Image (tube, rainbow, N blue to C red):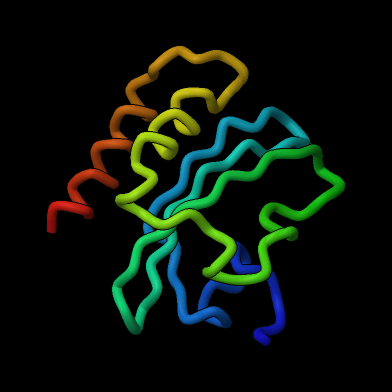
Length: 106
């Protein structure tokens, strides 16, 4: 089992961060992150939020704990739309969603 956090040390899990969006306020995090497994090109995503005490994605033990794309694309879009305490659809949320959709079409 790799040592370290998948968010801070994705290379330990044969992953890289493709893109992320964070709406956390000061001393908080509210993230949706898309990861790519390097050896298989699989895409997966996860969301996590909290105050400054926990570490983002500390409850994730690896790539297998993330939700796969595109099977969960509707859930992914909903998570992004809900990010930031309000369900407004800001330009950066739409841009993030579109980037992921383009990755899936490639």
